[in-house]
Amino acid sequence: MTTPVTVLMSVYNDLPYLQDAVESVLNQTLTDFEFLIFDDASTDGSSAILQQYASQDSRIKLIANETNRGLGFNLAQGVAIAQSPWIARMDADDIALANRLELQLNYVQANPDTSILGGCAIDIDRDGQFISDRKVPTTHQQIRKLIWTNPFIHGTVVLNKASIQKVGSYSQKLPKRQDYDLWFRCAKAGLKLANLPQPLIKYRFTDNTLQRNNWKVALVHVRIGWRGCWQVKASPIAYIAITKQLVIVLLPPPLRVLTYNWLKQFDPRRKVSA
Image (cartoon, rainbow, N blue to C red; front, side, top):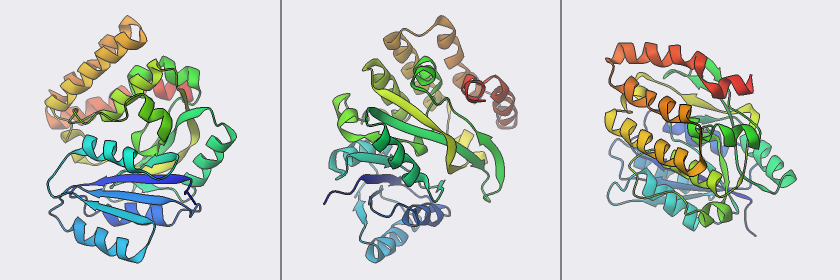
């Protein structure tokens, strides 16, 4: 019998947070799921930990890449081979709240026309301490209007496999921001979008979170955003706002963090959901 949901995780050198992430999935209140994990040629000991978990829990299907293929490749492959009609994204340094899958499966079963369902998050630091609550727009109309802002927290979403495959799934060509690109294509195709108003994960936010988003990543973000805005006929202000990503990464690291935190007060996603 097919399980209702596949949890999809890509891992590359995600110690020391990997165990918390995996166990938060294994300890969900909804227990019937497939756990599809790609080990993307990790070198920090993550592989051994994943192998141990896989030997202890039959829900885990571990795929070990011989070389590092990148997130886009792993996500596209995961969507293709997932055995369930729904796919739940999970990042290897976050923590899923215990009832995350139960809440989301209950919603999509009651609202079967939904193709993507995300939710809010609790931002935590590297030690797991609370930083802030992160809100997102919840209705289809709000999300569609703000699609250029990336109105989904990627690690919270469940995706309808059939719907995502119809729009081309995750791009394997993009080094980063595969989710942002996918949201634009889903919006253009008219898929039904939603976010739950409650937090579904604890999102790990460290000093490296912004540092990983260098100018090359920001440039990819801007290119995807501008192309997406044209596809969905977004307002001119959207094109301008998207460039802030590039401006932020060009700042010195201490000023980058301060600017990022200061700009939160103007984030339209938070205002809509307040």
